[in-house]
Every structure is written in structure tokens, then in C-alpha cells.
Image (cartoon, rainbow, N blue to C red):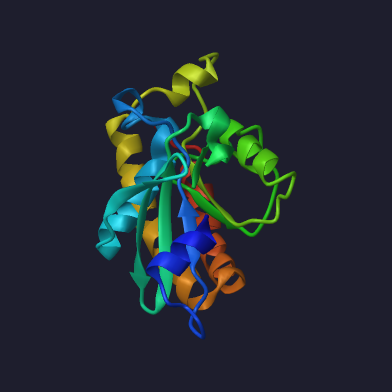
Length: 201
């Protein structure tokens, strides 16, 4: 899919290789603004920051394409539901709300969208991912109900800050590469994690 799009839209011979950023979420108004859809929000925020329009449909996903500096970038929001997302930046309850992590590889962490991606990559886990913390459900609350809730005012402020930080890390990733950007960014987020992990949302 990426090769077909790049041949049609970009001339990258001798230039930087294209990047594809995919945000995980569910389509439809029912899921807008919920914890489940912060991956979509990350894509939308980055697209707006770069002036990229999300106005093309390919392979069960809404796509945008443009350049960040000299680097071709494709953005995608799969329109399959989370459990089937691999057909076509994800939320993470194991991180405090508003904390981010950038990794070069890893498992699915019980995240259904990541399970689907790995399955459709034939078990390959060697791809970068940006995890966006949404916090854990309070008390005995059903995790599924928690995911489908909208953020409180405090939590939304943290997510808005995290999305802006996400734009910064994606720009750094494109200019400095994965290893350098992950080292810098994860060190900053480690201290944020310590500061936020005991605060209510």
C-alpha cells in the first residue's frame, strides 16, 4: 500500500524514505472524544500542525499525505473497529493519563488494536509505536466502560498537552531518527510519569 501511494504521489528517489503514521481508534461519532480514540486525535493534531488534509480513503483507512521538511509522510486512521485494525498511536491504560512513550518494538500489552496489527504483520513486533497514557479505571470499574468514557476536564487538559508533545516527538523522529528521539523523549516523559502517577484524573 505504501509503495503504491508513494509511486503515485511522491518522487523520493535519492531523498528521505517515507514514513507512515497510523493512529488506532474506532470510527463514528460514538467514539469521538473518548479514551479509546486518542490515537485518532494524535493523527488529527499532527495533521493540523503540518497543514496535511485527511481527505483520501485507501484500504479501509482515511489518509493524508504531505511533507515534513523533505520527508514524505503518510497519515492514516483505520476505519475498521479496534479488534480488526490490522486489516488496514494507541491508548495505553498502563501509563498515567497524559504520559507518552516511544518504543522501537514490543508486544501488544493486551491492547486489542496492537494484537490485530501484530497478527496482520504475521507476528512481526519490530515496528515503532507511540503509546499515549489514558490512566487506569477507578476502583472496580469495567475497563471497557472506562475506555468509552469521555475525559474529565483535568484529564482532557493532560491529553491536550500530551498531543502537543506528541507532535514534537514526531517532528524529532523525522529529523533525528528513532533511537535519538526515543532516548531524549522517554527521559523527559519518565519524570512526567513520576509526577502524574499519583494524581487523580
